[in-house]
Image (tube, rainbow, N blue to C red):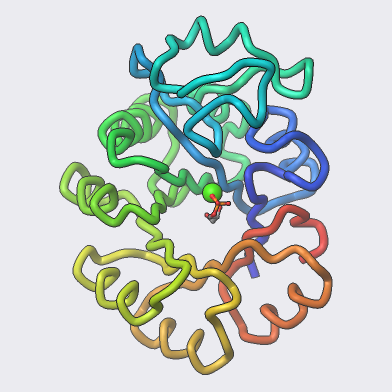
Length: 225
Ligand code: G3P
Ligand code: CA
């Protein structure tokens, strides 16, 4: 049962910051999940929303700012917004990284960065899984590099997600945990996919989802898994 820290260990540090990912490592997470957008000068920015409004002292869309402008804003009054390569360097192969593409326009840059870490820094494909609710973004990833593991995110139709996962030879289905029961998990696994549900936080939900024999759980508090 893999422990995957949602947006870093979001229960303990501001989400999607280097501090949250460091905390996830300290909690012995098997993987971290994070979200990405692209800056005006094409750097891959780790943040959940497409604006900086919720997390920083600034306002506006991430894709209207350059990296140096984004670095001038503060998260929780003290942390900088990280880039994806800064997170890769922090993690340094200590766990796998689930990169969630929030938009299709990040596919090319994320694939290139993963390829760079594999060819130049000794990482391998098992260190990565790319997921998205935007299935066109996943098609693009598969076209660019079919070796990169893919997770199909869904919050509604499990059957459609399964059918799509077959067409792109995905590694995993990432469903809202409320879509699952034991039979559905088995059905997905019998088709050859891993099951990584999100976002499972309470003790009660964690125990319930564990009893379905999923392959991993994405949680704000991975230490509770
Ligand atoms: O990847 C699972 C989960 O993170 C998807 O929802 O809104 O937290 O990005 P969200
Ligand atoms: Ca996410």
